[in-house]
Image (cartoon, rainbow, N blue to C red; front, top):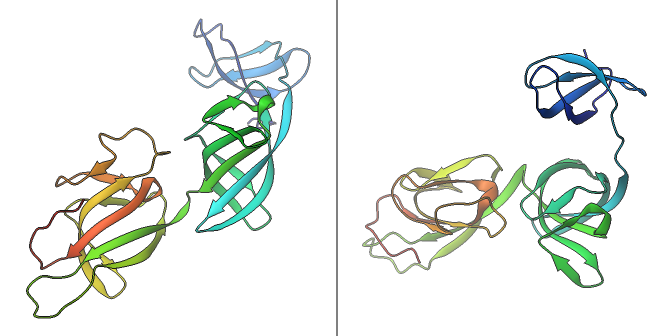
Length: 216
């Protein structure tokens, strides 16, 4: 059982490689256990410099500021995800930009060079939904927009039916955010295409009984 939550990358006599180790007992000659092969041994663990950086979390139009410790040499990049303890709640967030100076934002920088890390919450998200009106019902209706609140790891699939308010609709298109991990395209509209809610900029749908239409 580990005495700390600390981890370090050191050489492992069991694996013969540099791997991530749990620090079981810190000290000049720390006791560590390899997370790959489980070999326990003693070694010197170099302590990296830590820096506190402001983290701004955006969630559905609101923002809250907090601080978080990073390894000074750690690269903080757009798309990175981590947990941050804000005054309101502990949130899973994704980096959207790294500020290195007044009005200077970049996609990646060492933590020591960052002044502010801009993020958005991804554990629970609001997905904008555009619903095309049902065709042939004899009524003149407008395309409707709404916000669907779901867990960030909820997966939407093109061709599936979902409830949006009181309506049952069919998913016909998924528009992917620019900060999301790599997808095949930034617009997905083939049957079976799927994406997580936290990666969506917008979801397109139509009444489940209406005929096909052009999403984009």
